[in-house]
Structures are given as structure tokens and as C-alpha cells.
Length: 223
Image 1: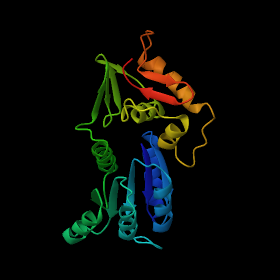
Image 2: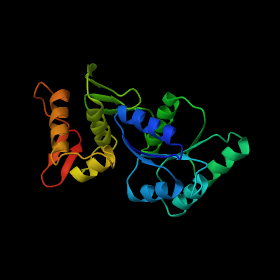
Image 3: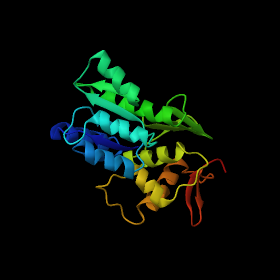
């Protein structure tokens, strides 16, 4: 997933960025509401973690303006304000979820996965395509019941394609969805990752579900 963390507390912001990056996500960081809103308008994020109280522009104002302008990216409000009225207000403006501080990183990661799953219309965390069972929550892949070990980046690439079965994604679109702004992937990084992913998923030489569309990009679909 490509995620945006908007949080003015530097220690928490950097901790979340490091932890979610280790999970294989592309993570961008913003330190105030104005910067976060600008980035949310510019990039195709799978989800946004938005702090409630921030300098320059309050989290609720950012949320209200994004929703007013038709930006539907799932947004999780993160705040120390735990009153029921506060939660109702945030959800009423357009937040998709609400998490109060302090919180467990595992819960935040699970909530973000659930938000993106619902956004893509998935009933559960498992995507089934041909012989593959891709568990987005557990970060695991089975082929005909046999476990396949992938790196965090390889899984992120597979997830990107699997959430959009039958949709051709260009190299630039894939880079936008799996790399953060601070990453500087080589020009052939996506091609190399696709090659590695195919070898791991289909080592026996059977037809790969990851198809190349010459001049267009890649698509995950049954051959």
C-alpha cells in the first residue's frame, strides 16, 4: 500500500513511517495539516492517517476540504481526543475510522488494511486468483496450498496488481502505488521486481498470471 501519515509529533511520525515501511508499504510523511492536504491531493494513496490536532491547519478542516472536493481516499483520524461527541463529529465529516492515542501499531496496521479492503470492495482479506490465495492481512501467499516466501516489496507489488485484477497498470502507476516520495527506484526496478515475482510464483514454468502488455504495462489475470 501507499500510505500518507500526517502527524505533527516528529517522534510518532517517524516511528510510524519506519514501522510501516518495514512492513513493505510506501510511506510519505507530512508534519502539518497544510502539507498533508497538499500531498493528499497530489498522490494516489491507498489510505491516510490524519492527526486531529495540528498546526497551520486542523485535521478536521483538512478532512472536510478533501471530502468537499471529492477525494475519497480512506482516512483514519488519529487523536488523543476520545470523547464520543468528538468521534461522531469526525466520522460525520467523512472519516472512515477513528483511533485514539495511545494505540498498538498492530491495531493501526489492521485498521488500515481493513479500510483499503472495503475501499476496493473486498469482503475479506484473501484475494483468490487462479491457483493463488493472497492474504493481504497476513502478508502471505499460497499457490495450490503451498506457501510462497516473498520479500516485503514483492508482496507489495503483488498486492498492487491483485487489488486491480484485469486492469493494466503502467510502470509509472505501479511506482506511484508502492514507492514513497523518498524512494528513488532505478528505471528498471519494476521490471526486475516483476521478473523476480514471476519466478517465485511460477518456478515450474507454468503460465504466469502476471501478463505483460507491450508498451502499456502489467496486469494480473488468468491466461
